[in-house]
Amino acid sequence: MNQASYEVLVVGGGHAGVEAALAAARLGGRVALVTLSRDSIGRMSCNPSIGGIAKSHIVCEIDALGGEMARNTDYTGIQYRTLNTRKGPAVQAHRVQNDKQAYPRRLQAVIDAVSSLDVFEEEVTALWIKDARLRGVCTARSGVIAAETVVLTAGTFLGARVLIGHQSRAEGRFGDPASDQLAASLRALGLSMDRLKTGTPPRLHKDSIDYAKLKPQPGFEPPPFFSLAARKERDRWFHVEHSGERERARCAMFHVEHESSEMAPWVPGSGQIPCWLGETNERTHEIIRENLEKSSLYGGQVTGTGVRYCPSIEDKIVKFPDRNAHHVFVEPEGRGNPRVYPNGTSNSLPVEVQEEMIHSIRGLERAEFIRPGYAIEYDFVDPTQLNHSLETREVENLFCAGQINGTTGYEEAAGQGFVAGVNALRKVRGADPVLLGRDEAYIGVLIDDLVTRGTDEPYRMFTSRAEYRLLLRQDNARFRLRALAEEIGLVRPEVLRETDGLESAVSAEMERLETTFRGQSSLAQLLRRPENTYEDLPERDAGLSSEAARQVEIRIKYGGYIQRELDKLKRARPLEEVAIPGGIDYRGIAAFRYEAAEKLDRIRPETLAQAARIPGVNPPDIAILQMHIRRMT
Ligand code: FAD
Image (cartoon, rainbow, N blue to C red; front, side, top):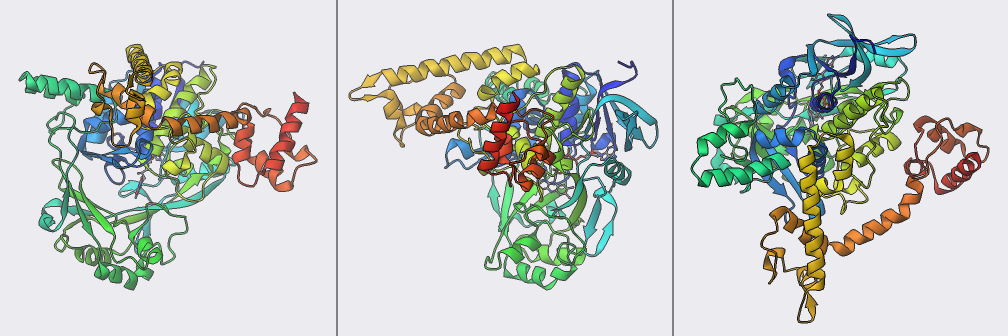
């Protein structure tokens, strides 16, 4: 290896880039993080909130595998809730409102503390390719930085245009420069790219809101945390508080050793701030309808496809003309932060129309604008050009992760970043890539969807995308990913041992409940009754930890459904296990339909199951392919 060369070079310090760089560096890799500005590392471009339906599962998975997002969220949160508490465990999800300044600041401090990770404040203008091999990146200032692998995580910045009404300017995010040269260089390399759009609401001054007209939404107590670390500290914190050592605990818990901010550290989960609920009305909708042609989205300025499930307010009014109100969540952006975020009002109308529209909402009549809402349109790389390791097939040793692959959301970006960072380093070190299955993790579902199907709109995660969602709950992430966590090597051995201990305790308790009878019924049968919880059992094990008790309850109550999914998985597994030889000539298989051959040749699935998931590839095509592979091997 060239001594001056990094093993992994990550372009971009957003949510994908941070996880990629930390994972590779913590595994002992020599890593460079090259990003436009040090201060914006880990910045939350949109709402300072992490989690929510299905996204929370990704955050828990990142934690179970040794990534940072869950801890960072827990330690800088200002409001913690669990969504869908009345529904089954598969769709329950934590959601945390974060302090917009503390979140990136803590991440920056975490990065500073990793000695094998160098940060460069630079614009990457192109990939450095010499003798048909990737050698690193070219930058606007330093010339070149050498690296064996490159992970591209440039988010919304490639060829980006910010749009407000009919005005458009080249920016990668409000106030940040667009990355036009890098976008052009990727195209020149032959990568296929397309355009997408997303948007964000205006930001309002917190003191200009009439909170008496809105409905408060307090956080949950005790705060539901994503990370094992914060959950442990919460337990310790409650213990310490009772023994009167509050101040010492406060300092121990913020977890930023080099914190030099004016912001006082706080105990994670303490002093929660409420969010507020309001709604639009007929007048709001009328203002939007009257001004639709002035919006960038509807006035023809935007050509990319937008986020279907996180639509702009213009989209909502046009697509749901019968609705006379839409929710608006008024969310604080932090403790000492004057800005609030009116979630649900994302738009690209001219500023004066935005003001009129916001002022028509009860409670926001006198709202002062700190920044207008805007739309952003940007290039993304067609993710069907990637392998499941997130390496591109076009350029060896080049990995892509995050919004650049057509996704939207911090969590989706972080999950991909983690996988790309780990796999880039493994590639350098000659190890097989870590591949997550659709039955193992939402991150696996996400990557498989992107790589085998591609996307023509910003892709966000939903529980409905996972066919094994009862197996992929947020509560069991550490159990289902335990073996993979050990293989990757980022989770401490004592944590893995603790998981093993919990697993044994859960199994033993389930066995006891199945074999202990009260009258005609076993304790497990009593627990299966809808009205009963583990706590209600006449002879529960009082020594069982709350985490193990929850596993026992879920695994017994939902055992029938879980078994059904396991059976489905067993039936699907044979196809998952048939590897497709790398150099297969699809166009040369005479019996193939043209469409199937073309799609398989372009996407190059790694297993028969992946081939079967490609739209346009039908069961008869799979049968032909299976026969062909059998003849080849
Ligand atoms: P980003 O967070 O965008 O980070 C990209 C990083 O790359 C930045 O640090 C940048 O400085 C760096 N970079 C770019 N080009 C270069 C270069 N040439 N050289 C060096 N560094 C470079 N998500 C939702 O879930 N819901 C929403 O409603 C939503 N709305 C959004 C609205 C807007 C206006 C924007 C901008 C984003 C929105 N998002 C939303 C998306 C969310 O912000 C992203 O999904 C997430 O930040 C993506 O993470 P990332 O790491 O892929 O990229």
